[in-house]
Image (cartoon, rainbow, N blue to C red; front, side):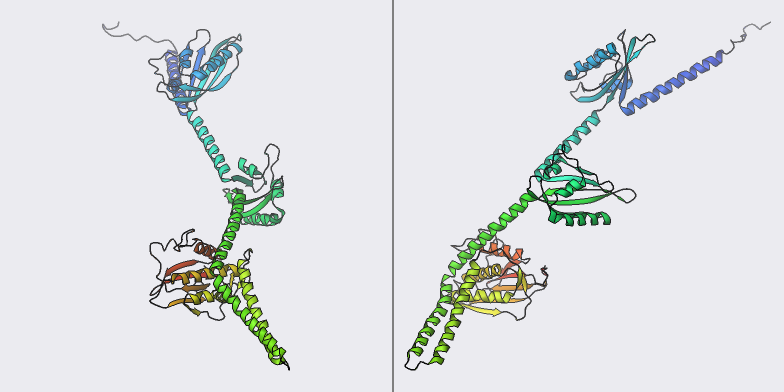
Length: 532
């Protein structure tokens, strides 16, 4: 008999505890799966939704609430709520997609925008799948929405960068290219196609197509340079010409760099092609204009030297007349003195040749020739100029002092242009001393081998020297200190010297005056220079 107050244990139904445990484990398993799913949706920015076609009731996952930025505690999911934040311009098409899926049973996928409460815009990819029951009737639309805002913005930024790059290529006339070293396959940017005058829609691009456009005279060198670069796995840089389909010629400059695989092998070459045709034309026009300006300057200088030239020519002509007259007298005697007459005629020929040399030097100085860089005796050039300027220096009371060592190496240059430089510097030196009366007007000219291995020429006057305020401007075009100067002489002189690979500069003399110095490269017989 049971004791009063005691609890009697009754046996439970067989298996009850097992079923309860299984249910609890299944519930825990489902919760864990739901947590995993929620986390996966969060990581992929993808929310799920379900629409019951009959009841119009909706289910939204937590991630869908977050994407649409609705509070789950305050918002009841529905199609109208879903559409509420779809951008007005996209709302109708989204609604039609859901209706069409309900009626036709077809999946849909589309991108749309969300206009949020704070005015910001999101981009989502919306998909829906109609689900039918056993009888084939559509009962639900199961869908998902992925936040693709970051991807859309990245794509837009990429397109914007590509547009900027394309515009930059167009402005700079620079195209991009890539070449697979194994297959030979080529990629050209739009500007690259334009540079080569080809239509990408009508042309099957290949290395042979490119090579056929290269100018025949440049093709072998281009192939050799590119082949050597690929073999050595090094960058290359080469100018070349192409003949376009319309027959016109372009000047191009191509630069290529290797891209390596993890194995160290070259996977491809990428590079740029620059259309330098306009620059080449501009350089040619500039060189022509500079040549014309230099010739005008020479003419101006020759005007200043007119008196000296007249004197130089008049001397041999006067001698020709005197010797000719003497010869006639010797011949008109009753007994002609043939020896004296012959000697006089010899002097006539000598003086006539002297006059001819003066005229030849003047004609050469005025001649409009292209520069011809050859081996030149710089001391010989200086002496030729001194022969033309001798009278000018004499009438200005300028004393000349020269130090021109014999057997200086030859320089590489254009004789006429070097004459122009030296003549301009000599005339400038004489002009600088025109107002000096308290000391001798001495012009010193010397030549020597300088420290860089070139030849240096220095022309020193005894004038008042350079004003420190304008010392840095005397080589500027159109700047002059002379009342009637053009301001081009020193500028052209510097251009000529630098075109020869030399340098021209000015510095104060000691104890007074100014020293103009320039260097010239030594000629080594191969056209190469040895002057820094």
